[in-house]
Structure formats: C-alpha cells, structure tokens
Image (tube, rainbow, N blue to C red; front, side, top):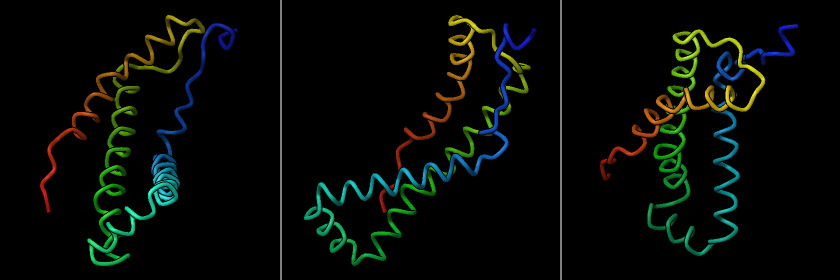
Amino acid sequence: MKSRTAIQLSRSYVKKPSRGILILVITSILVEIEAWCWAYPQKVAIVSKLGGLLHYIGKLISSILISESVTVSLTVALLKSAHRWFGIRTVARNWLAIARYELSFLPVLLLADSRQNRPRPNH
C-alpha cells in the first residue's frame, strides 16, 4: 500500500555519477558540432588564433569539460549527502510534496552555481 501513497526514490544517478559526466560530454560534443555548423568561419578563426586544431581541442577540454565534470561530480556528491542528511527515501504523491522535495535541493544547486560564477583567471 505504500507504493500508492509515496514515490520510492532509487537515486540511480547518485550511485553511478559517471552517467552524469557521460551525458555532459555527449551534450558538449553535440553543442560544439552545432556551433561549428552555425559559425564555421568564426570557429576557423578561433582555431587559427589558438595555433591549430589540437590547441583548440586542448582549450576546449581544459576550459569546459574538466571544470564541468568536476561540477557534476560535486553536485552529485552533495545531492547524495543531502538525501542522507535529511533522510529522504520517499516523496508523497502530491504536487506540494514533490515541489518541497525539489526545493530542498536549492541550497545544493546554489552552492554548485556559486562555484561556476567565480571569476576565472585569464591565461
């Protein structure tokens, strides 16, 4: 009867954080492909400015993929900790309870976002 009144949380995304990083990498590749399709001349100019395709790929990996992978890993670890700290195992089947569950992660997501909004040093 418990399944009718509550949603059991499996948190499979927390158990295997590599899935989040894989989704991030795939999304980044698709966005980069789309950027090349829409702005080919500008991308070629950037590649030549950076000194070639290998330098461009290195800059892309170091400036986007590594920092975003760290952010995904930290966010997943914080979400896992939040579930453990607050003892969240189920959520009632109503909109208010689901909204409250989602809003309980706001501090975690703001913490991850504050890491992203730090000024980055120029290289």
